[in-house]
Image 1 (tube, helix red, strand yellow):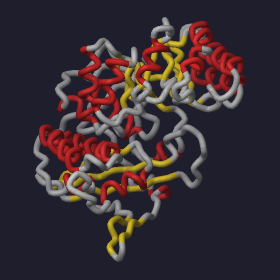
Image 2 (cartoon, rainbow, N blue to C red):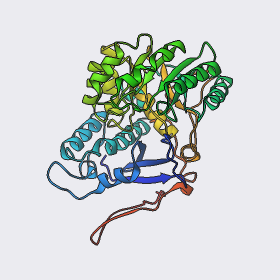
Image 3 (cartoon, helix red, strand yellow):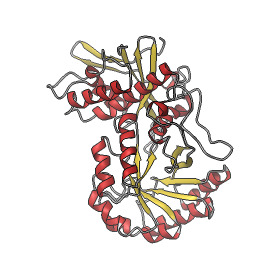
Image 4 (cartoon, helix red, strand yellow):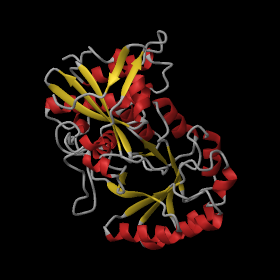
Amino acid sequence: MRIDSIDFVYLAMPEILDIGDGSQDALLVRVCAGDHVGWGECEAAPLVSIASLVCPMSHSACKPVQASVLGQTIDNVDDIRRIGNLVRANSLDLLQADHTLSGIDIALWDLLGRRAGEPVWKLLGYSQSFAKTPYASVLFGDTPEATLQKARGIQSKGFRAAKFGWGPFGLGSVATDEAHLHAAREGLGSDGILLIDAGTVWNTDVAAARARLRALKEVRATWLEEPFVSSALDEYHSLSAESGTVGLAGGEGCHNFHMAKHMIDRAGLKYVQIDAGRIGGITIAKDVADYATTKNVTYVNHTFTSNLALSASLQPFAGLEADVICEFPTELKSLAVAMTKNHIVPDENGQIRAPDAPGLGIEPDLAGIQPYVVDAEIRVGKKILYQTPSLSR
């Protein structure tokens, strides 16, 4: 088979709010090869990724991503890696390339899985998709009382774990943050797994993060996620020496294998969190999962968008029995819900698995997304490089 077309579809809520919620817009990817179709999703600003797909060549190492994909043979999983390597070589100086490649890579895995009638995790070499414990992933409330009520709601729905992040956390006083932490623990209950996401709020300020460690230990937080930016390896390592029972988590900002490897090797992480929609797709996410296993670092998916992205993020570690915690967004905007016909839901034991169905096992809802399609065009001179594609085929 040869890749005939790549369609990027920009989706967005009618209003985008200034909050840490990645489900407010999306970039849906469709790849076609003959009669076969695969679907993916990029976790990045949609218009920027569209531009990197179609931009004019600047020089030999700065080509549009589509130049390395269209017309390529796609017959087996080795072709997916070969195509990814072509993109990285030909778009070396195009810094958005890995984000853009991510959605294409995911769609190619979905396409091959659908053609073979096998789930992606089997194509990755796993014999079984193990159950994962989903953590309800939510933003901190505006006040400690609002955080308490969110935590109680999560506990009442049967979740064993919850992650609170972003919002006001880290922006105000230590005392206010401590109140939020204790409210989250109270609402979740004494047995719940409590996870905290600082959202890089302290940049490289180790002292600011250190000031919250006492309360994090008091509430028995399992991890503190992204206290610093991803490249602040020394700061991560310094804090990890003091964090004790509170493990450090990070890695969602990594957009290639080497960045993730450096964090695993040097940051003192107990948990590495990888977004298949950013790092270069399922291919590179699986490489990281394999490497993390050799270093006794727990692999965790990162996702805060649609169930298409959720399924893609589960595939790379579906067959790792010991790595059981997984992100499960529960405050999705209507766009992210409408994107797919089916959804991954916890079973009677409160656990989820990567779908046991061909490809990603998730069907896009083309009618459902129509109200969210953004009409966009990229023109250079008189040449139109991109127009919002038709979803009918």
